Amino acid sequence: MPVTTTAPTTGGSLDGFVLGYLPAGATHSGPDSHYNATVGPDGLRNPGPAPAAGEPGASVSMRRFTEAGQSASWFFVSVLRPFAGQQADPSEAQMTRWLTQGLVSRAARAEPFEVDAGRAYLLEHEGTEATSHSLVIAAPSGAVLTVEGAASLTAAELRRIAMAVVPG
Image 1 (cartoon, rainbow, N blue to C red):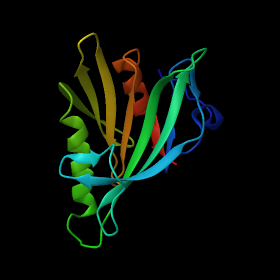
Image 2: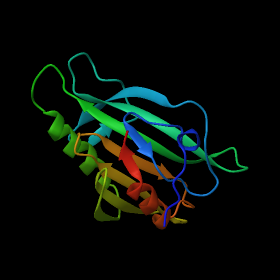
Image 3: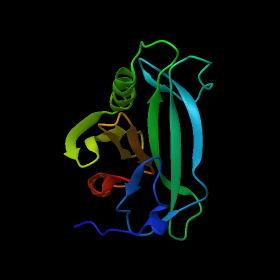
């Protein structure tokens, strides 16, 4: 059963979402970062230039966590919020699909499941030295949340994080 943490530990709301659970030893590290990125049929163009005026994009809000006693980042939580360009096409709903599919398609395997915050995908990535996992949640609001980090962040911990994400 997940342990609920308090807002100061998780860093409070991140662009409209609260993390109700963090793995033991996780510490919010540094200020949140915010930027805009271009969105296309393959998802977020990141790294890359910010969207040109009128071009569709997504605002990205990112929070970094370290493991107790460590200085290197352990994992990142990001909220991607699509915004339309000057034209109605693509719609924000289409951009949400592009963001989600762009992230899910890069994984060797994807396990979808429902959580309070939306439709979650537990992703498995096969590396040359280790298998790692990440998490994507497509929220009904159109936002897409991601949790990515070191291979030591287990699938079980990612599932616990997903189950405890709530709008707020």
